[in-house]
Image (cartoon, rainbow, N blue to C red):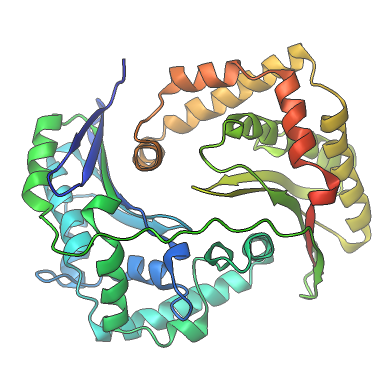
Length: 407
């Protein structure tokens, strides 16, 4: 029996609510539009729009938007990714209607005043420069560019200074009106509020849209040949990523790779890569494996930073761990421990109610459902050692691995 409740408004907006018992509630809107929706010349627009949502609507100034929840101790936030933009809030439960009305206002009625755009251009350009000064973050974007070029998935979420300089009210409104449509949104909420009230409030504040329905133009990126690329950045450390294309969110082996990735280089200090590169050999401060799944594509990679004299040894050790997972099935008693570890990590993460609310919204947008811990446990527990080895052989094939290195 599912623990969440759903409803669809006449304008096409889908609602999903997970009851809770805390004094604090969360709600938000996830929009099916991110950086991959941007055309050439507007790279960075989705992220720019996210910033500008706080700068004024038809009835509110930026100061009024900021104060609307902060005056009662609430928080309003947002973020942009490759495929989504999310606007959400955390607040005392008695301010649920206030929060719904505010979020509905900014995702439907933002006006993007030019004087605010001019100020925000400088702010985001500073954000881009700060990001460029962080090679451990920048390398992830450059790695995605290698894997996905020339598809729109290749360019980074922040965009570039040159494009952003030309953003104006007309361009912002065009993108906003094209993608911020009720049919392309999910409203999510978590808290001790009656769902019937949430439905009524959403019916009240989310209006019928006269905007044209968006035509989904996403095209899956073609698979590129593996590359070996070294970029001179004069960094103190060598920064390196080794990886390849991987499964999309609907692939039947997605959960198998998720577990495999956690075993190899998850957040635990007992991950295979951490035990090898850091604990045994003392070569790195941080090494991690990451798996990102999107609607029609995905990628997997290992990242580490090390001193230049240790670069070759680190790369060899990483490749040894990958080869070992391909050659040697994980023994049953170890696999059971790895499953328990992953289930514990997921359970602990779900105790963060903000994370849980965001997961609720994204899951309902992408799958039309939300799996609780019982369903997640069942999926993890059915994974076998043979399946892990099969996926390792497919994903960790050395002929398919792209390498990107900063030095």
